[in-house]
Image 1 (cartoon, rainbow, N blue to C red):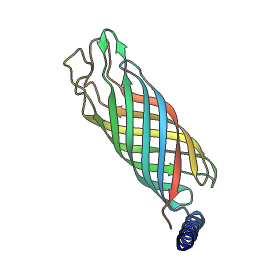
Image 2: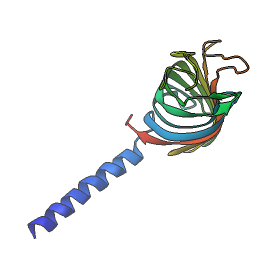
Image 3: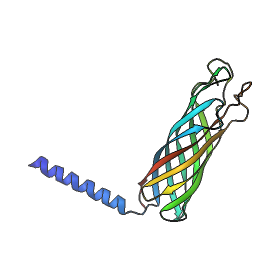
Image 4: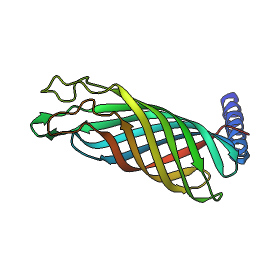
Length: 187
């Protein structure tokens, strides 16, 4: 009987916690999501998959600022005789979002620095090294409600000409789709 009472008490505490989290204003939130995309331009990479984590504070009901990070994995492909290596991107970025209405269309971008991780060489059959990172941008446009965001994105790390090979420009960018879940952190 004691175990039953403890289970009822725990269920009550969890229910109260979830109810208060759902009723709180969503001024501060943690955004967790995933995305997939096709590499563009696609000289050295074919596709990308990633996870996103961000903190957002709604400065006004229609304007949010925050910080964003995550990890995107780009899959290398063979091109012009080069066996291009996979590369990962870890961004450290500012998050900017504009929400014209409480539910519906939104747009924004992440701006910062993208660290490139993985093999140091562009391709396994060359000694040319890739860049260690560069300016990072991720504009997105999509649909949002209280809990979810669904979006189309463009993700790019600008590396200049570092990593270019004869007949192949080194690029780290994709166009894709994704989703995010908003976890309220209180007022």
